[in-house]
Length: 112
Length: 111
Image (cartoon, rainbow over all chains, first blue to last red; front, side, top):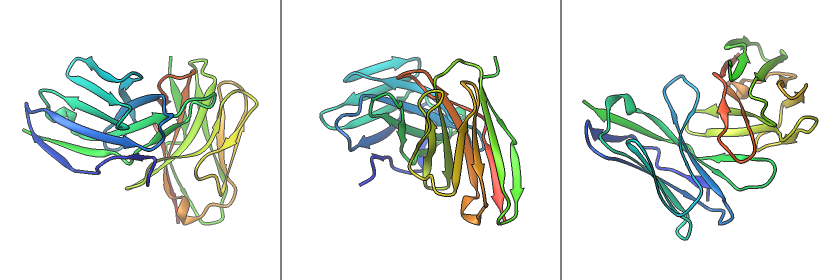
């Protein structure tokens, strides 16, 4: 079992719809959770981070964390073609090293 | 404020050649990381430096060495390049517990 698992996709949604991206993790001691967006040929950039159970909203993006189920998700409302990218889930298990464990990413395609 | 910079952007090596990838950050971050990214494999940690003067192996360290030259700079060296090291290499840095900032990447091909 991989430490951080994501469906590789592609996830195809029509413009204006809600895109739902999911991630599960295996280490119950994980403390913080990050969603990165990566356009083709570019470096990852942070979209959202979440530390506590529940929802965290930032504009069109909502991160959801359920530590009991070891599950974190990212919702993108009113999806736009410019949201088409690979979305990487990353988990920090804590400690002084601040290491992140990344999933393999989900490719999102927003159809105009 | 340039963030995280990497040089070179592109490199082609022949098997057995050596090279050093350079990374620098101007955000006064303590921790720095080297990743490689291959299709279908996600980002895999090669080496990291939790603070100036320390380095540790990550998930895929074989064939690589690193140097934390000072707080700003963290270099990755390939002593004898192999085709399996063809990849995109990203450097990242962070302050404690928060997001990692990534450099633009180095696209390396080993023939």
